Image (cartoon, rainbow, N blue to C red; front, side):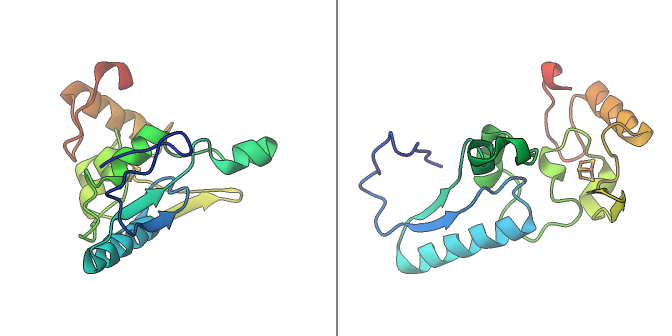
Length: 159
Ligand code: SF4
């Protein structure tokens, strides 16, 4: 994947007829992946270049910082997910969409999509939520192994 920063970098000349997916793509969830897959497919059919344009910082942080939602990913995490190291955007994933890059991921996360849970005002989909006993246990198991159930290698300073 080639990354350019707008408006500082010039558009590479070989980006003929770019077909653009424009969005924040925070979390790179299934809906995002369907859009990215479609852009890539159409670009392939037309001999064009598929391009993703995203934002850093997130626009609400600029125009209404007091109401900007918290983000799931840093720009580096987002780019890593968009490039397709996993998820493979041509394959429908089983399990949790975040399993490939989640440091809490357990075998269950690879095969079973988490149900929507929650209390009024706060909802989540996660088998091992951050701050829960299950989440703490999952993090400890993965930290001890140095790798998650999806094969994500854990750096010592990030576990
Ligand atoms: S721990 Fe939660 S967020 Fe992480 S992979 Fe499992 S279900 Fe998904």
